[in-house]
Image (cartoon, rainbow, N blue to C red; front, side, top):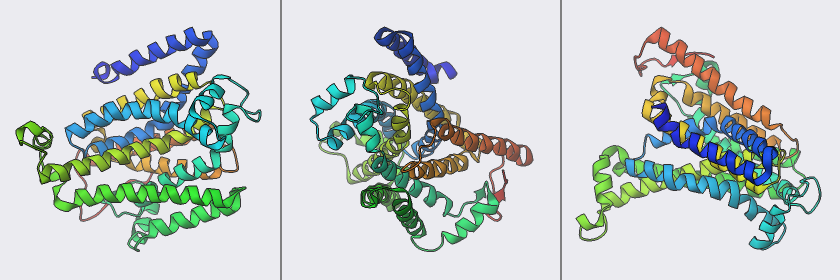
Length: 376
């Protein structure tokens, strides 16, 4: 099971380290290894949330996310995205931005690739921070059968009965961050609002198609996959398949934007280690993204989220912490080790609480009459 799930990740890791060594000797080898470890530690909570969403998708859309999605994650976010940011911010063409990236200049020197990307950090942090914050707020303001930090989650769930409370709280926090932390509040406000709108639009569209009675839950995976075969229908897929396909598409899109938001801190943090785009692509993209994919597959196949009931809670609290860190980093640099450890602490605490819950309750599912609670 382990080799089957993580085999490709191990192979890609070895190939990436060899490529890094050939590219820049032992220095590049160790930098690539450090970036890979950094990305995995930062993205474990991402894998937990990915697994939870993948469980709601048909086999077709799961495969699409784990193949096409991983290519977008590797090449789009870890390689193309920084180039696009530098190109737009510095008013350069794509080729000029790539040439600037390959110069390997000191990221603290004005005009270099790393410097330009760091200058764009407030906008990136505001967008990613608000997207993740909205995800966290929607989770903690929703009433659940089982709670982890019951002393805190239960009052938040009661407050969540107020309509649009997550939007109100998110908007207030964005306004405070822009006014107190940003040198240019208008730019941060605009980026943060775009992050909120992106979350609300993608999440809302996915929920719309799922709740319309024609989502994945009401159609078997066989019907979904067969409906995508146009030869069997003599034309396009049926209305049922189209609606199901739309639900899957918006979940897929939601996962891609979510992965992008998780990637912001890793991409920006990588420039504290190296500004070489080749090493960043090898370490963050190939090693880090592949292991996140493998961890996601493992969680889905093993049913880990159902077995360890508080992992989802821990992942969302880690997301909330990461969102706050991104907003704080608009003005104050937060060490990447701290960012990674925060996620590890929340996930680790949730795992231990899950073990404790299993010892107390066995494998029984919590009842709806009285919410089960284990305070970490």
